[in-house]
Image (cartoon, rainbow, N blue to C red; front, side):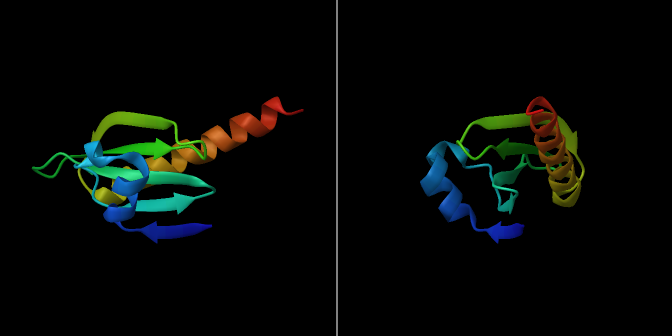
Length: 86
């Protein structure tokens, strides 16, 4: 499930210290949030369902590429967790 979310809600949920966050996407219960560093440079932070932040400090040239990296990270974490359950 993927759902777009506005930055105001993210700030209310995770605090005002996330002023660089531009928008977020909900994917499999995780928030994927691109961080705009200006000058066409973006990173991504993923928040698990418990609210733990998993930052990715690699810089990407667009929000779309940062969010795609977030999807990949979340899918990898979900796969990793499912493998440990067996």
